[in-house]
Image 1: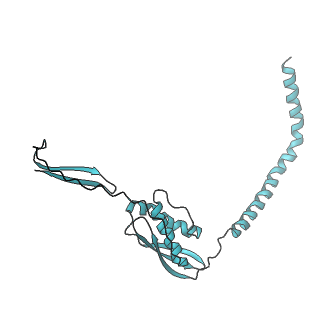
Image 2: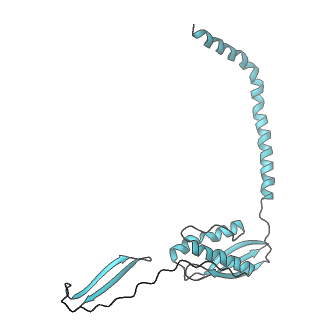
Image 3: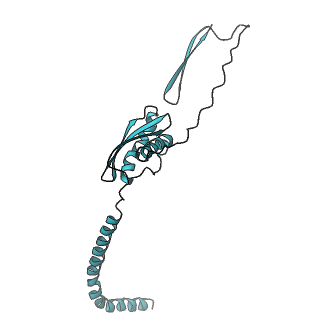
Length: 191
């Protein structure tokens, strides 16, 4: 008895199937038409999405702005109303690993045709220096980037005079530790 509804449903599907073949045969034609229209629409949208020409004359512009360690100088090349190249002329005061990260902005500025892009994470101040220098080069505006946080001055050294014999043995002692830019070696003389 349970098989009877299943057999009836299968018979209904088989009976209706031959009638759907002409409808299914037309589906690829309809898909082709839709795809062709989408390609045409996409190509016209791509033409509309081309970046507008910038209002700067063709030429080579030089600008600077404050980065992490000091001034960053760049050279911006304009051709046919577009930024075609950005080069760093001087970033000698920047930390090398941060500068290496921030250099990817050079390509981003050319691709977006703007200095108004996000800074590179973990190289924020160097990034701001590069982007501000591009803005300065093209507009002539002075870009005042915020100063990086300044380290607190070290406490003054305390000189103690020992009148009692020291528990330390006389000699020269050397130790190493990892600092911001690499290994730091310290030498202490006990006399």
